[in-house]
Length: 96
Image (tube, rainbow, N blue to C red; front, side):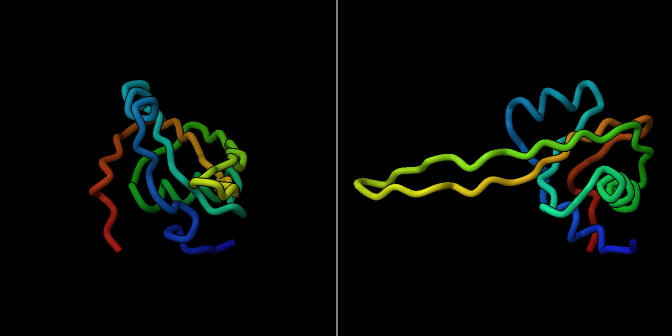
């Protein structure tokens, strides 16, 4: 499948935990809900010109949210933890 890699990798996840994972050559991305390990691997290799060693996919669940007396849900999303064989990713490297 030739899918636009910009539609697979939506954005990097920049949290304290994900920044600490960079030291172990692991990077975290928010990905499309229909993405699988192979499509994420191809997208990262295409966008950042690196070699991917492995991909782990995590589905984050919906969370209850409350604003005043109104309750609802914050939507869930899918994230990918990408381990690199070689190379580094700088988030400013992506050019559209």
